[in-house]
Length: 88
Image (cartoon, rainbow, N blue to C red):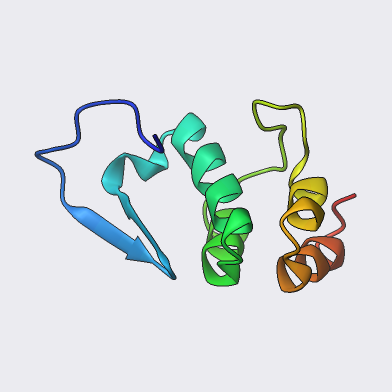
């Protein structure tokens, strides 16, 4: 699951195609949200997380970085964006 705490009382927030919650600001949730956005090709959320939330490219639970994850999920637009930001 994207968020592991009880969020039933929190208001949903929508970024691009991904519907998430205000708990989104917590670092671990931001990382999970980043990888979910990459998986589904949600470039708007990827940009928001990197440019506005200060998310850095860390590894997912399988040890994959975001660039490799974008390749695995065939998300060319996300891959190209990450390259323009200097990630490798």
